[in-house]
Image (tube, rainbow, N blue to C red; front, side):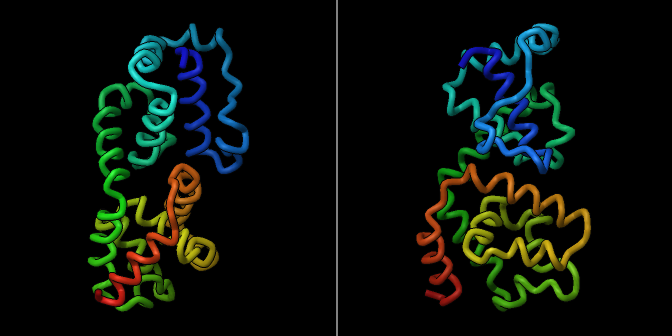
Length: 196
């Protein structure tokens, strides 16, 4: 990937993770960046360095890892990625590589409670969301649960608050980047909930 393409990928993914209307996959990663605007950037060197260090797929993964790992993708600037990006990327890679194990561990902890309680939002934030917010379950596990149970649409109707809206957007935007064998994770969940 040439430096300008790295920059365009960065802009497209930033739009994907911050704007409800933009879909990276639908628009095939296109952005309105111009070569002129790229050469005016003071941080252009960083995009050049990144394009030399990483393969095309790694560049995309690097940006995805950084946007999903930060608190607010809207406020992440390239300088922060320069300082903390590689650490976030390595941490994300570890989670992806051990996703089955991570999902099993987090599910065992979560389902010490009754199954219904985990998704119950009649009294406000459900246990599932609280567990995510305090760091007991990962965004990846949340995405897998949404693929299995499709709870997001139900929560969207019942929870009208900025906390859930932010998490909901993150789940929707991150989901297409996770290649998940739903059947495999359903099997793990049955073992956890069934106690085998």
